[in-house]
Amino acid sequence: MSPKYVRWFLGELPSLLESGVIDGATAERLRRHYGTAAGKSRNWALTVFGILGGTLVGLGLILLLAHNWADLSRAARTALAFAPLVAAQLLALWVFRAGRESAAWREGLGLFWTLAVGAAIALVAQTYHIPSDAGRFALTWMLLALPIVYLLNATGPALVYLAGLAFWAGDVQSNGGQALPFWPLAALILPHVVSAARGNPYAARPALLFWGLAVALSVALGITLEKILPGLWIIVYGALFAVLYLAGEFWFGEAPSVWQKPFQTFGAVGGVALAFLLTYDWPWQEIGWHYLRHGAAYHGFAATLDYALAALLPVAAIVLLVGSVRRGKSHALFIGALPILAVLGYALAAQPRGENAAIALFNLYVFVVGLGLLVRGFRARRSGTVNLGLVVVFALILLRFFDEDLGFVFRGVVFVLLGLAFLVVNLVLARKKGAAQ
Image 1 (cartoon, helix red, strand yellow):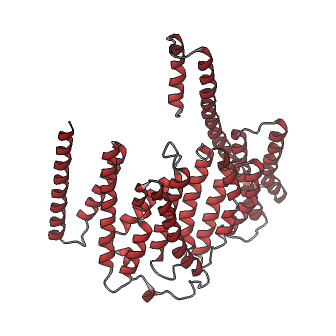
Image 2 (image 1 turned 180 degrees about the horizontal axis):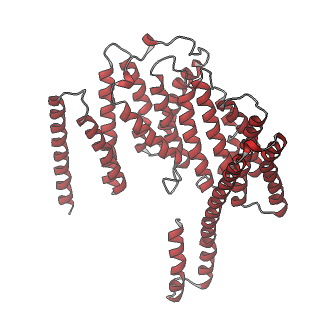
Image 3 (image 1 turned 90 degrees about the horizontal axis):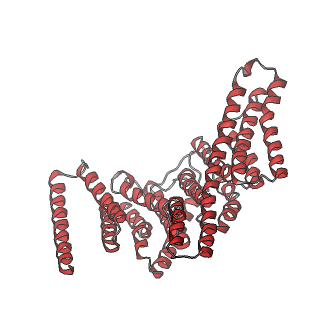
């Protein structure tokens, strides 16, 4: 329950007790139960302030060390470079010995320690003129900071670790290398994620980790795909967003808020955004085996990941989709059908002059998704779902209205037909409502 409603409910207990609705023992039990929930909310606020405090202290020390850095001797620079790192370790020892192992202490100290590691690496390298680049620095920093995640059981350093790995992967790929090691390195954080989600997967901490994982997976996938076969990313990303959404629905479908549904939310938003992109012609141009890429910038061995993901992710999405439909979650078809349509669209666009069919397919898909959300919202009387459906439909209409690739006559005829269809549907709904009344 939201802390706002918890406070309201606790404030209502005296009047309920006075009017005889509940007895004293029941009121006390309710206070203990919901008082714990309110306490957790306050603890989370303390954790946020701890994270901000640790981050600001770490960044402030880096700026202080940078002041007049060139005027210091090499020995003084070395000592100052290691000073925040030693201070973080001593503070961690004190935290453990004093029993101050709350989330606020662990998260704040974890971020400070992580920043201290990065500062020490950078300052020592600058002092002794050790050759390096941004990618190597990020990888070294993240590997040295990884133990902090498990020593302090802290989520902040885990998110920094994922972000740093993604930066390293982007740097490697942009310089002609291959960042496939990102995946086993990212897997090193999974035990922490599993441990955090074991008690309550809907708590703030695992939700934050799940959001970080969803973002990191999506970014790293685009970076590490070798793209030897043009357009294969359409299938891979379509299947990824579907798998995220369906996995969230399957295992975390009872989450009470959007914030606590990271996989569903990210998968749905990403899937719809991808579908909107695929209503244009540029993603479908020059794709398929006829445009296979060659050259020193492409690594044939790394393309194996592309082919494996293009084969396995759609299969995983279909399996999850079947499971969701069997459990009565037919709305999962909205996003679950995306990888199937991506494969079909890819097959169409790979044929000569077949991109128009793929474009029409995804325009129809986006329209059906928006219309399906409208119908589902009306049936369930959920204004939020109705509004979401309206946003999808009208966004598609506006994009097509300003699409210069379509002729004025074609757009005019289509819009008139769509308008008439909506008016007919509105008339039918109005008659049904009148008959029901």
